[in-house]
Image (cartoon, rainbow, N blue to C red):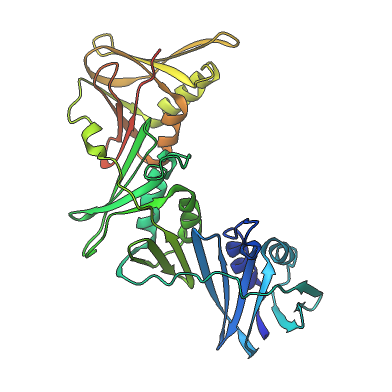
Length: 365
């Protein structure tokens, strides 16, 4: 291998790939990034067996070749090189030579024969603006279960419905649903993507302004755009029939300004107990919307918030953290809270947008 390429492009590619390297004692090669010099490109690959990435950057290839380098080592090297120029890479025996105007570095090259193949997914493909797809992911992924005990809910479920792509996640205590409008999306198989893979998908394509090509097969899905190819396994399971637990009607409704509610929640949390419990009291006739919290070691708090109220009186307790998580998916000035009695879930939406629905199960006081 003998290659010349941009330091900045290589630094970014290695940094992105290194985050996907795996720690596997029985397969130590997973902690490596693979550099493949071919034609007029340098490919950087990494995998943890659940996710696989390949990034292409332009390069002047004098001699083709492959190098496997410890991901954390080479990432740290390039994070410490600040020159905005080209870097020269050359494979010399069992070392990769890295040369810049100020640096001369040798890095150990590992045998790459055991490096797993990155799945090149073939099957049905769709194209969607990257920002729409990532918006769907970001709106719901925090609501998924973190534990792998039930993989089908430690995930984000995606399916198509009429002119929408629907993103859903739940951990059994709360549920988030986001509908993204799409046109002419074609055939889209219902898919379940593991929760632990979602942050990397978001990170890699979050600021992408162009279209994202998505291809899915029986057990794999891939994302392609801006020279990045990312593959992820798909969970083989059935997502719960979540629609049956979303109330169709409500007995109490409150419309509040997001900033007012956010400040009240933050104050209430100071006095919440070890379970993050906060109680919401709504009395429409008295025009009362009040948050209460109490902690024997800290004190107690009652905070009233101005709200437009209709329906029945109700007291309901909920987890403060679950409510706060939803604010990142509610860009609207006003929030609607629908309630259906003390033992039924709260349903939260933006006042001017029905594309996002968030449900929180009440806590037993």
